[in-house]
Image (cartoon, rainbow, N blue to C red; front, side, top):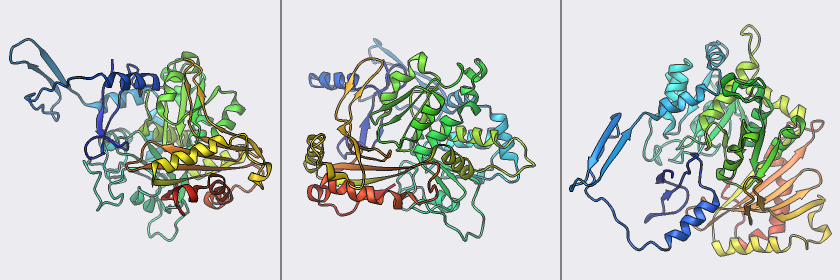
Length: 482
């Protein structure tokens, strides 16, 4: 058994194509494909829908229980209203040592800004950052949840997505442009640390002063520094730790920065299809927990819950920063310095994503089908100046239950560690969204201070040529670049 959450969704559903239904299994995580496929098959046999038209309205603003009895007295339903912030904060308190983070917030040289983008994270942000950690209320942006996420008149235009394009109020304060470049010349120096959550609080964005941390780098940095987070400390028993991190995973399109950390630290590593549901079996397997995972689409989390957790990711970063700054008399080690130190150790995976939204569905399918058909037929000179190592359609063999998920995206993997990935997204509202992922690896001895969009541009040109994207879709430019 499990709940059916219903509400605003990326996935088109309902009369106005703005409603989605999800199913969470008994472990609290998204239903795997084998479950959703079975539900779909069962849905074809539905012959009658019964609804309780006169079910009384429940005051969901008041905590407590309400019992509703049917008119004939044959059935009684109990509706419980509770404060979810208490439960979530309790779980987070079991993952982190909040006292060092409190001391970090108390430092004169530390400043902080957090944007809830008018989503549900607001009450949680006030509870964690202000009431527990001592942040000023003025450091929180858009913490009043709104049904339209602020609407078209807001800085995010009602798009509660924590990225450089939509979280502009926060990014402007932090001194980061839409392209991820540093903005200088502010009257007031930007805060040291900034973060944002999406509408339902499962995604996150991490920023330093005039510095953007890509989700792929964020995941790699957290895993590399996991021993600084009590839940993942090598010593068993502390904050629920089972003796250090036992496994890590990323979605296939996410950059390979995590792979290098796992290889260096001998951490079992998994590459899964896009979708948090694919992490669930791994999280439920004791030999791989404690476990950390993430996606390039600003989702990061652990096995403490079976979903992405934006607040968890922010606290993970704050715990790492606090651990690297134990002495308040010494200069603060910043977000940018932590990431740059990571690159010096592992090299840098320059990365970008091109989204082509509202593409004709059949055209997109035909483009993907052609690339899949060509997987082992490409002429040797098709990839110059790169040398191809593998071109395939990604399929995932679940190591836990043996299930196979096919057709999960086209991959071009090159011998220098660079990649081109194509996949069709299920989160578009009209037509299809074609996503093109570009990754260029630079060793730790190379130039680590270039701008990602400039570095991956040759890969983008090659990807467009290989896919015949213009011919299939009629598009000359992507809708969004992140």
